[in-house]
Amino acid sequence: MGAAPRTFSSTERKFVQNLRRLNLLSRSSSSENKQKARQPKPLPFAPTALTLLLTTDCNLRCVYCYSEGGDRENRTIPREAIQKAIDIIVENAFKTKTDTVYLTIHGGGEPTCAWDALVAAVNDFQNKAQAAGLRHATDISTNGVLSNMQREWIVKNMQSIQVSLDGIEEIQNKQRPKADGSGSYADVMKTLRYFEEQKARFCIRSTVDDISPSAIESFVTELSRFSCCTSIHLEPLFFCGRCKTSGFAPPLAESFIKLYRAAVQKADEMRFRVWYSGVNAERYKTRYCGVCDPNFCLTPEGHVTACYEVSSLDDPRAAYFIYGRYDPNHHHFILNEAMIRELQKRDVKNIPFCSNCFCKYHCAADCAAKASSPEEINNDRCKINRELTMDQIVAPLMKALSETSDETF
Ligand code: SF4
Ligand code: SF4
Ligand code: SF4
Image (cartoon, rainbow, N blue to C red; front, side, top):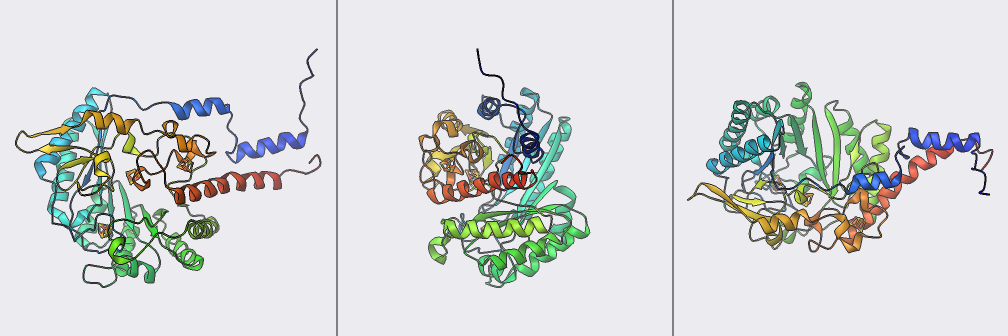
């Protein structure tokens, strides 16, 4: 005779209900969740989203800039290459029966510094999508040092806006000076106030160096006063590009963890959202970002890269991420199919180092550009990702416990 099924006390049932209410327990089984996480991306490669790293030019000289914006030869993607790329995503939308195409305007330089090219690219995208009967969405990442005319245009033409701002005035001016060495804080705040007046929602992207917890708390408080600011995305500074000459270096993992906890605590008090890309205990996935689709992203020189931070052939990571180029003589793109297949293989299931990591289906092997090689990982970020994922698991558990009578525990 088998043992009688175990019955649960009312306290145990309440504890489980509290975990479910806090989204810590799913009604589906963990094997279903793993199955969900393991579903592969559909192949073959047929992007319906285009990203433009429009120009190498920039009006700032951020101390850690991965592309050394403003210091490289001034290049902007030729309009013809952008038009051909738009044709490709529109055609793919038909092939894959997708009703929306996407255009992302990203850094690598400051896109608004190539203003005419930016306006032309967005107009071409909107016109071609409309002519094809497709819905279209645009988003932009900008440093926020803009003219009034540029602010107005962005509000009218961009569905999603991300502005880079690293902290309170002293920190922003130190880390993100203008080309003439003066501070950029006042200009960025003017932009944010304009977006607020126009009720245009925006999020903030902050690169964090080793700063004091009180500085990050003041920053969160300052931004939480903007009703249109949806979140602050914090990332630890990564050693690359201009770090080699500015002397800036990433914060220690312990320092970032401490700062992030201080920011989250302050954000909770202000009913605001702070996040970091390596941590999301509610998310199940095996691929970290669009690098594994791969992204269809044009560099200022007309190359096609999978990674937003690898835009030049001089970058040693180009051999893994840059998988094609626009051929102006024959008016078409040449793509390396073998490289595309290799990029599509980047999945946490294929990375031995991650196999026993408790947060592998949340972290999904982290940012490939910040690993020492495509198959390896960055130990400092691992430490951050694991500790902060653990925070997200433990905090709701403690809350569920505190809301549960302890009569049977
Ligand atoms: S990080 Fe962006 S804003 Fe700063 S120098 Fe580089 S391209 Fe310009
Ligand atoms: S690999 Fe990292 S840097 Fe490159 S696109 Fe993905 S998240 Fe961005
Ligand atoms: S924390 Fe490190 S080991 Fe764990 S999944 Fe992320 S990259 Fe892999």
